[in-house]
Length: 355
Image (cartoon, rainbow, N blue to C red):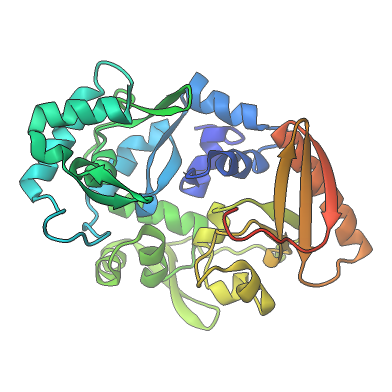
């Protein structure tokens, strides 16, 4: 992957959270000079240098297509954790394997909507897979859908281009099966290069795995212990050089930006009042944030109206004249990425998290 490309940026981020696709487009384009949302869309649906699939924490992410074998290898190694459904909802290990195999077979020939995929899975496995027993968004989903994240982690499917308003699923790029040298250790190495120094607890939280499993992985990898923020932490062996100067500048980061989700310790990233304003029950990413010198210093919100985008920024403390000019530049960049004319308001953000 080349530096300065969407795939290069997403690889350096260890994936871009894409539950809200517009936020993912903004996250990636902000890291590339001159890029817009169209740049990211072309990389995903045109050149296919990016893929959309389930990544860390089982959530939807953009990943570099070239890295998919590593991700499939690493995610396939993870211990299964997640929602604990009642016994009458859960699938057995054998049933899960059948569903994963059915999904892979169904998308091999063409892109399918969720309903079309469901019909194919039930036809291949049996009526039990279609039982409407899984609570989801004020409705009930068929039993087989609880295996979607597992199937994605095994490389059975990736997301395809939308068919109208409907999501589609398709086969992953050729060569997705993992190589023998890839796996969780390689993912840990890349995570630490991006977000280290870090602890097993940090990594477990980011990947949504048991802390004990993460601790064993750290112990087996080629790492180096350092002191960071008054605590022992780890980096890739030899990766101990630190920047000579602390981060400077003003940035506007969207929902679930990788820096917000992976950045720890939280008390350094969200100092003082920032924790109460920009974290949601301790969870990062539900608010788009204003960064000043690498720390959360406020929240912001954008609202699209035709060719305009209205940006409201709520700083937690007054900005200096120099910082205000930097904010103006950042808002202009947001407008460029969104291909809209930006209008800035400094004032309270009244929308709730993830709005």
